Length: 143
Image 1: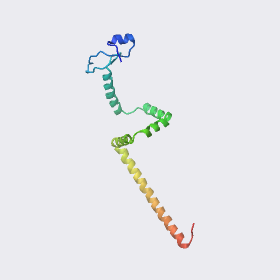
Image 2: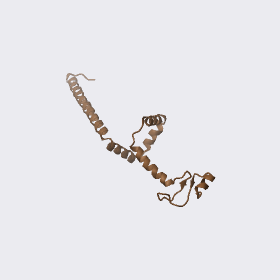
Image 3: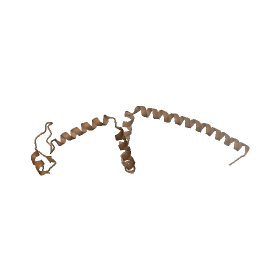
Image 4: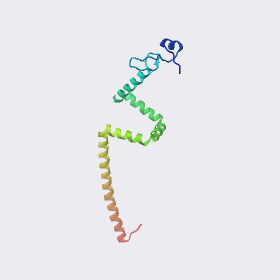
């Protein structure tokens, strides 16, 4: 694509980009936006800002917007999640476990305790049913 060679020419023609073939202050030889910045510098800045934003807590408004989006697009969100490769799902799950060990440990303990309680009640019921069935067989009641 042919870009204008000066900023003034780009403004005059209404182009969004221009290319001077000279390095910017950071050393990139890349197209520049008519508003005055190098495209490569913009990409680098976006990456660093995005990494910084990931560490910030989400506001309540942002969380509410995410919930609204999910409710409006539930089928599409679920379909995208189902279409993800298994390696990506596994990687996400492993990252979550590393970042939230307290959640994983407490939920594991809770489910373990629930399973033990269920097993115990099933065992005692099974024993009771088995004993009762043997008793019925012994006295001749079937059915």
